[in-house]
Length: 233
Image (cartoon, rainbow, N blue to C red; front, side, top):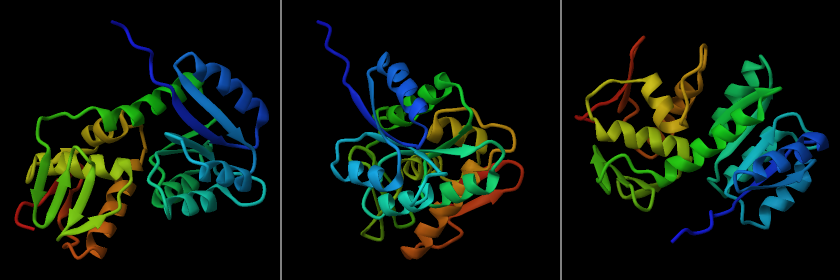
């Protein structure tokens, strides 16, 4: 018996109305329903109504900026966010990731690439790469089924990307994992040349672990190779 594909609801916050209309038509073929808001204020109001599985957020917005929108959203939600940035604007990309974006895409972009990014981010939460339901190390506990992270008994607020990175490292404690492997697992895409996304996500994750009372050297960098979670931490 064949069931109907579940509709995924996406919110686009971008002042380019033509882009919004084009993406609505393009994404509909993949059962991705797009709602568009053209200012940060309207986007936040739409988001408050709930029901969105993912946000696409342009950094350059009239009125409240995309980064300010992202900060407000991250105060209350870990919904996946893809930031849209100007091509070559590395500073905005890094800041967006530091503020909690899961991934970014530079304008102009191919709609097929955006669709691939959306599907990869949504897929990672549904696909478990092992049968393990609980992962623990050095005071860090991850419930894979409920996607809840705890540090010394206190819940840790992580984005979906941060959760996937920590989960991967907990699966192979003491083993160096390359940035390429982390990108494939956490972002669902190949690591691009000069792409600092994984490094920024790792930095955010380290900060959250440290603020929660975990040692800040739990995740160690092997220069030129990748990262590892230290079993003795």
